[in-house]
Length: 95
Image (cartoon, rainbow, N blue to C red; front, top):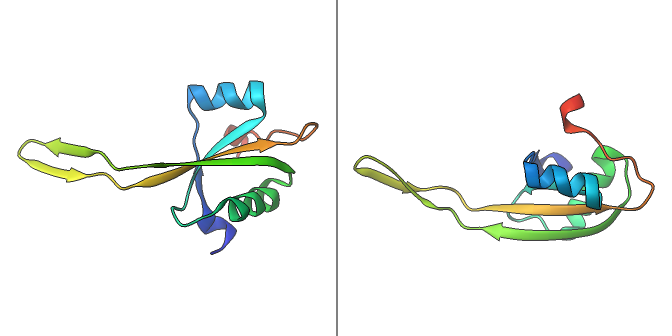
């Protein structure tokens, strides 16, 4: 699995922005099969920063309906990546 397959996209939310400013923590949507070591290595290579800690959480897809049709959203995985002290926090809106 390449680093571009491990990290799907950054999650830019109000909670994630507060965590980035206060705790030096970035949030990403990652591949469901990715483990913490792969996530750490991918963030190190993509953003040229040193990672202190990685936490992950799995989310089950919710049931959604459109009229009489119903289906489930996909299951997905979120990663909280804490950077070491003194590391520059990348801005996702600068790209």
